[in-house]
Length: 172
Image (tube, rainbow, N blue to C red; front, side, top):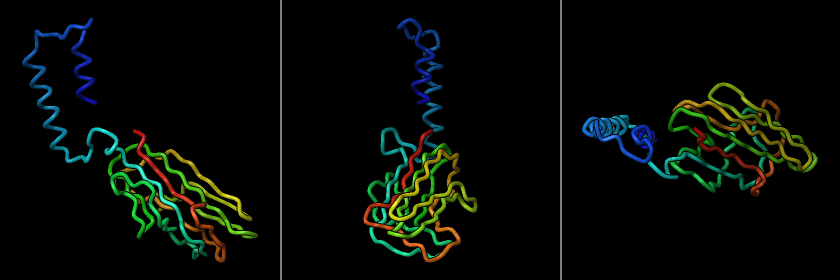
């Protein structure tokens, strides 16, 4: 993107400003060097956009304050969602769209929460086969831990079979 902005700055009425050709080349080399040196895992194209969607396969009764492990991954670009922990770890700072839907079992309430590290961000509630959904645009830092957690109540049942899901992607 820096390259496109730089080129756009040097184009005027369809003509490339040639008076500073050597300076432009040196600036481009410096930009490329800084990008490579930064160690950021950004690569051009869709593979560089961290994104995941995971669903819950089995019905179960989560313990109070238990992190929900959505165990079937549909998308995991970059591999930043872990089915073994239920946690999404952003690979870089930025704005992320995070979504979750949980579905309660028949005749039951279900209370869950969206957490970032040690802070609860959103609540989800479903009852009698209805869903609770949260959609949040969050400013996340590289290495944050984002997850869905059962609240303090116990004995509530969660419907799996693809009815409950957790998803997120990098916006900017």
